[in-house]
Length: 138
Image 1: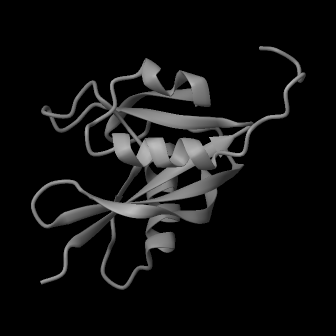
Image 2: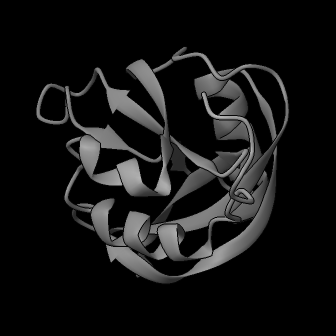
């Protein structure tokens, strides 16, 4: 039997990555992850990612590139990650999350990632489009 695929979006904007803090289930509450969820029957991973980011964050996003690798996220489930570009909307924690944070590449260790997301986050960090230095500081 095939593993059930869970998709997550490495949503980036202006060189920063979006991290989402879980509010449920209890064993994950307070830890951080890349937002996403399980594929529905008949969906492609890219379609699932767009739908999940819309449901969880209220944004429209475009999948850009599949991050190499798959990571086990529990019995019979594997995590696949795509980098995704924010097209419209301001991300809000609508479902299963209570806080969102935009992290620059050098800030990725500032949050307590779920263990299964950590290797994916490390891969993503190598792929994020970097902002050109010398821009306006914030």
